[in-house]
Structures are given as structure tokens and as C-alpha cells.
Image (cartoon, rainbow, N blue to C red):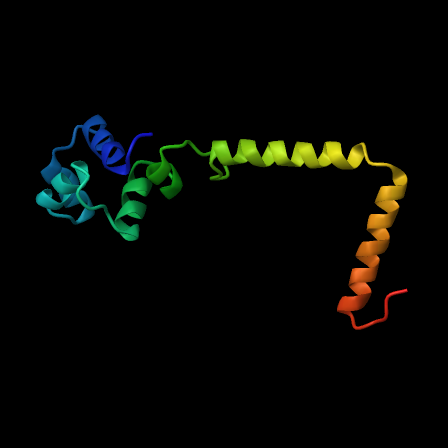
Length: 120
């Protein structure tokens, strides 16, 4: 997996910016940027935000290197979430009515306990 330091260097190079110009854009010293690109230290949250915004990325995209969807969700995480939802749907759609009925009784009983009522 590509590191944040590599992603920053790649973005800077793709934009055709020298370390000096990049530093001016984000209010950092050339030596600081040079260190980041070598993997010595890393930018703070505000600088990460500024760099991400400048390059039309989310902070998560810049930090992780994973692309995000239009809602800012990381595509990898979104894929996992969809898979979990699908598994849950398959689980409940294949459950018998009696199991669902027992779960409904349990949920209703839990609500009564929360409200301070006695469970039947």
C-alpha cells in the first residue's frame, strides 16, 4: 500500500510543482515537505485537509489512497457495507416466521424494560 508521503510527492509532481511552490501553497517550509516525502514526519490534520481540498480529494482518500464514491464513502468500505447488508438480508429472508416472531417478542420486551414496564 502506498504511503501518505508517496501520495503527497506524486500529487506534487503530477501538478508540476516544486517543493518550494508546493510549500508556499500550503504554508509549509520546503525542508518540512522534503522530510514528509522521505517518510520523516507527516502533515497535521489541517494541512492534510488543505492538500486534499486543493486536489479535489477527501481527507480519507489522501490518507488511505483508496478512492471514495460521490458521497465521500471509501469504495472499499462501501463494498464491505453492501456485502454485510446483503448477508443480513439473506439471513432474515431465509429465517422462519417463528424465529422472526420470537425476535419481535424479544424486541418488544426489551422496549418495555427500557420504559420501566414489566415484561410479560
